[in-house]
Amino acid sequence: MKSFPTKIVSLGGRVLLVAVIAILLFILLQSTQEFTYFYREQNQLFIWDMPHLTKMLLPIGGCCKALSQMLVQFFVLPKMGALITTLVCLTGAHFLWCALKNLCNSWGLIPACFLPFFIYNIYLMDHFVKYEGLLALCFLAVFFWIFTLLKNLQVYIKLAGACVLVLLLFYLAGSIAMLLAGCMLVFELIRQPKKGMLFALPGVLVLVAGALAVGRAWLIDYPFAYGMQHYTEYYFEPTGFYTLAWAVTIALIPIFWLFGKLNLQKIWVQAALGIALVAVLPFMYNTMGNSHQDRDMYSLERIVHYANTEQWDEIIAQGHTTTNNYISLNYLNLALSKKGQLLEKLFQYAQNSSQAVFLDYQQFTDIGVLRARQYYQMGVIGAAQMNAVSAKMSMAEGCPSMQQLIIKDYIITGRYNIAEKYINELEKSWYYADWAKSMRQYLYNDKAVEADPELGMKRRDLPKDNESFAIYAGIYNDTQTVMSANPEDTAAADYAIACMLLDKNFNYIVPFTKYNFENGYWKELPLRLQEAILTAQEQNMDFAREFGISEEMIERFAQFRKDALNLRHSGGSVNQLAARWGDTFWYYMLKNNKSK
Image 1 (tube, rainbow, N blue to C red):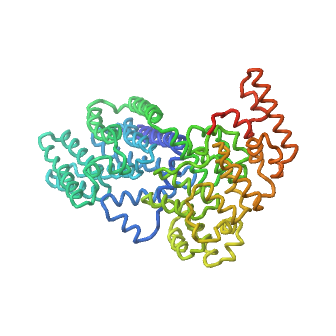
Image 2: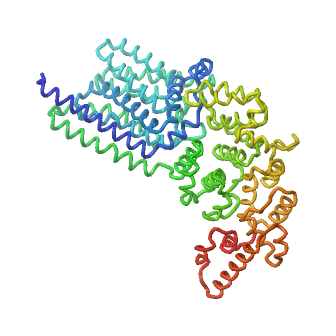
Image 3: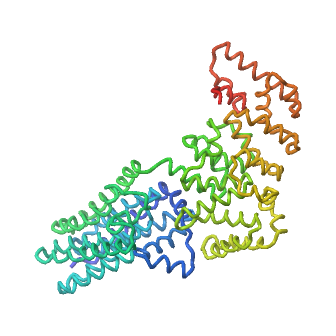
């Protein structure tokens, strides 16, 4: 019998180990997956509605999926993703320990029970690995613990219990049942080698259940029935790395058995073992995570979160780190447009074509979301609506931010009955219900819509004829339609001008300028457009004066030409002009002198 002080020290050691692991795990998750959690929340919309829940719960693995989505909806709050995930891992590791301590009751091995969960969290750095897979691993730990409670029953009763458990887990959580069958088999082979092979039967039952599910089209294919693919997006094929968490879970059973043969009951031995294992967990997570995480994707997840929460200054603050891909640059320029600074700061960043402002369409959901936001900002409401609906439909579980945009689009266009349908659904969510209720004031109320600063402006952007509503005629024609309808909304013009300037597209710049100036859409040309007109007509300043370009501006252009000529004669670098002229179209032209 252990003495009372020994029991107190033992309990204290367990609590301290678990507390340290929990704190470490939270810090690691928050520092490496903060924006992945936000991104996951935006890839689903959990509705508190019985028909919706029933539809989710009925399929194989539905219980695990529903619980996963119920938890993920809270990821919209700061730090909740890391906190909830830490609690899930604590729960799973606790039940795994309760099961494995039947083989070795040394509390120094408690950190080992966290190992599968640490590894699975590395998988979750990929947004296409579903969060429900972590919940499934937690389900496994609970069911395996229940199985170990049957250890002293007669073998055939225990075998019957095992069969019920694997089939129940298969229905509730999916293919993780195959791992449970493997754990049962290894556990029994270690405890009673002669009768242990009887426990291959649960695995056979899972194989049969999986074959039946695939045959009846309840599951897509055999990898979904038996492997990790059940917990990834359908288009992703997991490599061997994605089986490591499962393999480690099974490997812990013989490891605990081997340690059970050793004398690990001394306090200092258990403490030393626990400390060593605690040190291994963050080292393993960081080492494997650093080599596994897609940094570019994580940067995009960060930017998408800032766009969802309209933190445009945060996106702009990262402007000089987003030049490695066009999607990030598109979000940067969207943020500049939201702040009314698109043309003013266009040339302060490393941009070399209109693709940086308005990316060509690709079959990629994130680009669909981006284009919906861009079209809305430009006031091209028909195209914004089409892209938002398409992006939402491409996400099987919904997308809150796109649903919000769809509601706005339908209110702007006066299709209140459809907007009301989406509002009704969003009101059944947890986080977005209040926002949805606030939009009811605009339903069937044209005066309220027209009086709203945002919705009213966008309604005035609508073309006067319905024929050009579903606009997809190219960005220049699309934005021109908006400018003709509502010259007050300058975002459309800014986007068109930015694309023209970055492409040095003088075939559009001059006629575009002439048409809009002569029709009275501009009282004064935007500064960057003035620079472009002076460049296009450098031998004909009278043409520039017709657009109201001042003598001061003409003299400034002459000074730039003089500085550029002096630089050429001196053989200096173009970069020497950046301090004075770096934010101008002229400098951009000189530095990117390949003609279009």
